[in-house]
Amino acid sequence: MFELNTTTLPEPALMARIVLDDSPSDISWSACGSWLAAATTSGVVHLVAAETGAELTTWKAHDNGALAVRWHPRLPLFASSGQDGHVKLWQVSHKEPGALLADITLSEDAGNNWIEHLDWRPDGAQLAASCGKKIILLTPDGSVQQTYTFPGGTVGALCWRPKGAQLAAAGYGGIRIYNVLDSRSKPQDLEWKGSLLSVKWSPDGRVIAAGCQDNTVHFWRMPELRDAMMSGFSYKPVQLSWSNNNRWLLTGGSTELILWPFDKKGPEGRKPLSLPYHPEAICAISIAGSGQRLATGCRAGIVALWNQIGDVTPTRAVPLDSRVEQLSWSPHKNTRLLASTSRYGTLSLWDVSS
Image (tube, rainbow, N blue to C red; front, top):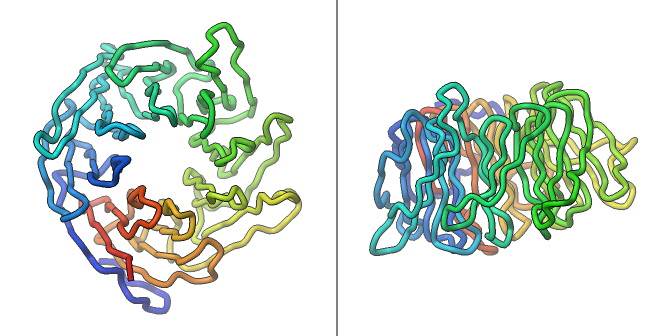
């Protein structure tokens, strides 16, 4: 294990530790908070019961590797995708966890069939999936509704606007926003010279931010389209998280947790709040549903817990066996459960109630 190179902090209570069959590629909580799904690079899905931390079942979901897993925002089902060109929908119940509902082939091209990104519309009416430069919209029963082509080649990220039916796709050349309820409307392009690797709407939908290949973060204010850039990152700032009150944009890509102010003045011309703790670059950020608790993880394998966004120091920390891959809080507002994964394939559930 890696050792903390800062003041030793108490560790959260370990509720469960599960050794996955391979390195994790993605994790996702069910909307009710009862189950956690983890996908691995070997194509296996692991289903975990949140109440007990027990692994309920595992199964081979995709040939080669699984790349993404996303629970429906309301229903007890989730989608998975992989390197085999398939999106699969799985029904979960206490009696029958992991029943296959639909198997949709989106690409049969062996050289271009990785489906890397999945994102449900906030109301659950559609699932967006990207395969190369194609964006496909699916219904919860697996029917294909619409297909778009991203002009900048391979899609780097997808994100729905929190309210409404606007889908943002990021990649080379900027962001394209689709109004999926009006097939006749022209997509809106936010141009940027370079490749965008991540995209995230603010909770109120007034700002859209993107992590860039050139170690910068670019953002646009909507609908004015006023844009600005934030630089100074040691690594690519792929990790983007907004505070629930829209006041802060949290970014990774450096050893310090960077909080950019998005109050009325905005971040332009102002220094961000920089919180040092991690010995290596932050590679995972997760904000609890209450909007208060915060978890960060770094390349050195250290997970830090912060009581509130903006606290100068974390209150707890724990070293994992390798680099932190994913962090995700249970969706309950008063959640006490945090899930973490490590590159070596360890899934842990932490109880942070006390």
